Amino acid sequence: MRKSLTLLVLMTSLAACRAASPGDAEPQATASAPAAQTQPNPQQEVPVNNLSVTPQQDDLSRFIPAGSKQLAVQRADLDGDGREDAVLVIDPPAQPDAKLGEGAPRTVVVLIRDAAGKLQAVKRSERLVPCAKCGGIAGDPFGYVRAYAGGFTVLIEGGSRERWSDEFGFAYSAEQQDWLLEKAVRSVVDTDTGEDKRLDLQRKDFGAIRLEEFDRDKLPSVEGT
Image (tube, rainbow, N blue to C red; front, side, top):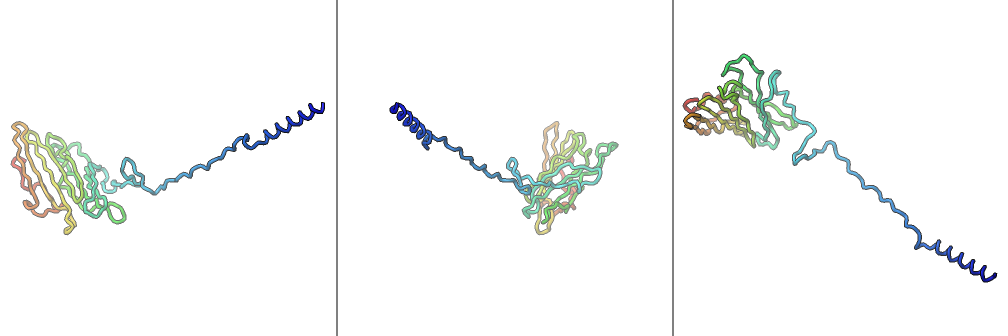
């Protein structure tokens, strides 16, 4: 009887020691602090497809008279000050009753960005891009405007059997603070015979012509234009 009681006490003590053993205790889960998230700066420019997108775009409508519309716009640093400028081509209101060869010309406006970041109209010409019906049966004579560092180029074209084209390039003169005609490429192609007449004119051929003084009709022309 005493032996049985003693054996029972020993078994109970051994079980209690095993339950209290630290090696058998379940490990406590350690909660890790969440990583801090960086909040975006709403004023910071956000790159999209390798381009820098600013919160506010230029409003060109203030340069366009009522009833007119934007025909084309190209952007570049036109005067070499490191700021992006623009060349704007304005299309006047349509004239439904205008005959072929009649109508108001387009206006080419040079927009320069000031130190405050706003575009300002500084130069314009109404003798560079003809009216929408001035291209003959070929249709609208406006081809394109291309802007690049220090200048821009305008292409116009038209005609019927004889297709003519004029490409005029203007370059900025820091001395005169104006855009001067740098080159004029004039050509006429006979669509029946394939004959191609071409004139490549440089500044030495026509002198210093400012944008606002430009008149294509006063330049040397290819016979047939």
